[in-house]
Length: 411
Picture 1: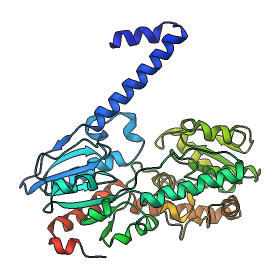
Picture 2: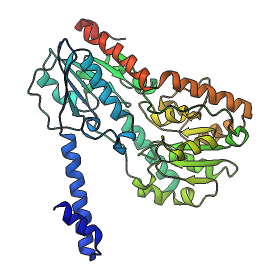
Picture 3: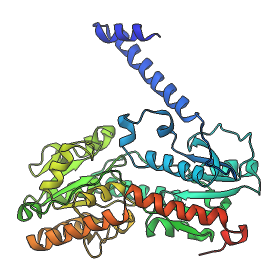
Picture 4: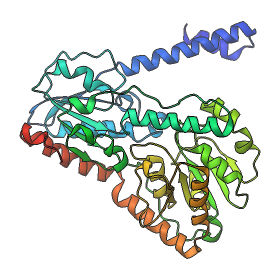
């Protein structure tokens, strides 16, 4: 169907059957575009002198979309994938880049290095051969752990609310860490611990955050200590929004702002409609850009981000909030530290969330101001693009220059 016909369909009132046809075609077109995007192969030339060829299996979007495309601002992994490829090129490798969801790519060249997140390393290892250095990049907890914890959280919702919600972040477990020679990972201690059974060296890399914020020292700290934000992406139960909503519904003197793609999970909205839209102290904003004015306005009025996720690599949404001066009220599973500037949620229960929120609300304005400054400083020192580039380049230079036997030693 031509663009002209699509414009005609958009501009004219159509019978119901025609509208359904238009929606179906748009869905098909979108799926076709996504499939073509994921099957694309991008190439970067090595900086001189050339020492070999590398294959990177991560995110392809930054290599095919224009820099101003709003999709690229939705997550840090788009930029990170491009930076990892650029690092390999700087180290002297011609780099081919594929999307980690590309299940049809078959190597037709000899690769000296392959870096993968998730599924492709296990699939490609027999083709790549023993001479190829295989690096598994960790960006989440092991998927067996990840899936099991989401299942437990969904079962908890069933017990409390009597409703079955579908899993939103389940993925197929893989053996990438087993076939790898070495691993890197922008993940916290919880996520790293789920891979240590394989006995491979794991090099931690700081998660990069795109935006820098100036610390707001003149905030109304007295008011902010009773105002909180939940800021996350898809997988609302996985990321503990159900617990947060139930906790705040029972604390009418505390205010919650919900920022995330709520409309993508209609079953969750149906189950929690009252809390989301009919509870006076809960304001549901929906998805917002962390670089936008609305996010800055919310961050300026709130004191903390509350995020009781059951499993993360390293919660970049929480780190973005820390960049904006919000103190983290989080579970261990987020990978985000809380000492000496935040509050740990000790369990994935409504009562545990409520207790952690009350601990923040009981802080004096001076204490909250101090914790905010410490959280902001931690984020600025450890989680910037510049810091990621520096650490990742050093790690990869060490990996590619080390003898193969050293690469496989257990740390």
